[in-house]
Amino acid sequence: MAANLRLFGSVVHLCKRHAGMLQRYSSNTSQISEEVQKLLSLKEQLGDAKPQKFQLKTPKGTRDYNPRQMAIREGVFKTIINCFKRHGAETIDTPVFELKETLTGKYGEDAKLIYDLADQGGEILSLRYDLTVPFARYLAMNKISTIKRYHIAKVYRRDNPAMTRGRYREFYQCDFDIAGQYDLMIPDAECVKIVAEILSELNVGDFIIKLNNRLLLDGMFAVCGVPEDKFRTICSAVDKLDKTFWEDVRSEMVDEKGLAPEVADRIGEYVRLNGQLELVEQLMQDEQMMKNKMARQGLEEMKLLLTYCQLFGVLNKVSFDLSLARGLDYYTGVIYEAILTSTAEKAQTDGADKNESVGVGSVAGGGRYDGLVGMFDPKGKKVPCVGVSIGIERLFSIMEAKAEAAEGKVRTTETQVYVASGQKNMLEERMKLCNLLWEGGIKTELSYKKNPKLLNQFQYAEEHGIPFLAIIGEQELKDGVVKVRNTSTREEETFPREKLLDEIRTRVSSS
Image 1: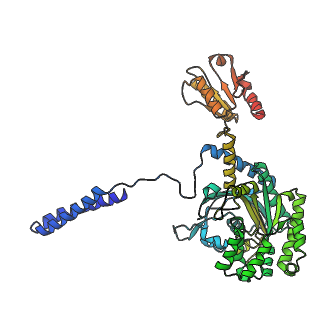
Image 2: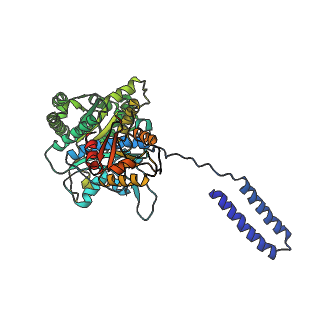
């Protein structure tokens, strides 16, 4: 369409120009002929131009959600928010975009996935990649040293989407973080407890929360002979073990990142280990590990964390796993990741080959990042932080699949009462009764037709799962009563109009 308009404008311009030239150069027939040929050429282009078809679709890596899906999402959000509040968190919000320099240098190799925005006013901006870095910026900017907060919002990653596995370019994160100077591993253990509570309440299947420690990883790399300047890049390679096989990770270390083969093989001996307190004790017998200060501190922290997990009743849900790396650069201590074990097992038994993701069941991750806030503070003041992020899109996919398998109706509204009448000319009375219920705090609907059929109103209530109908007619108005119908049992009771609100509240609260 824009191309057609431009061509049309050119035609008009040439017509005006041609008319003027006819007056000035009426004797110059060759020039007139040349202009006519240009005009005919443009006319031909305009005639051949075809309007392009407009494709109706969402951008790659995004999706729409219908009312049924949104009802499921809201249920998941409610469970997560209730858990966060149960643990004493308050909420904040931050802009969906940040100064690019705020995000630069915080994500390691994942920085290539940041969405940059066009300059719209002198500031170089990027869409937020996660909620953790904006939180750290918020703490430094407002000089906050102690807070327990949750934040639920969309983040953006210029990733290669795999939407069947809940991997999007635009998605929600649900973050819980504890900032402040506290004794070792107490906040960290509560974060693990929160993940276990949420996954248990959502009933998404068997899960395990993998635990590790960045100090221990760095100590292990040093013991194995990894040069210090390669710690982060090798850590990013190890982080891929939940998505691919050791042979592929080893090949990346050696062929792409220049690590000596014997060093990669030593790393392989460690990253295959997992367990609980017995693994900590085993590694504490490793002389080389105990000689390294970082490894020794990491093992001591892991022992304390597992002890606290036992006190919180979640030790049976955790696994100390040396293959867990978490590729983001800002982690400084404990790291964790929740895996849906039943989902991961299914992916492998369904014939997943080496090109497919093995650990497809990751639904939460996080860890300790004591140095991130200091990166924003002019004086480098550190605020110790630990937090967890729930992989909400993955959980939505699972909950949607469960709802489909159950073949039950998902309520998309919370309407409690439907005001109905089987007689004509009752619209005004229905509206008055609706208003009475609305002002009494009852979620209420009515038909927008003047004289709807009573059967259609009953069917609407049944199809939308509305538990009660308030029915009025000429006799009910004369007697000053309202008939209340239970949608599921179809039983009806009559109550005085002045007692209707109390009766409805009683029935709604017990239904």
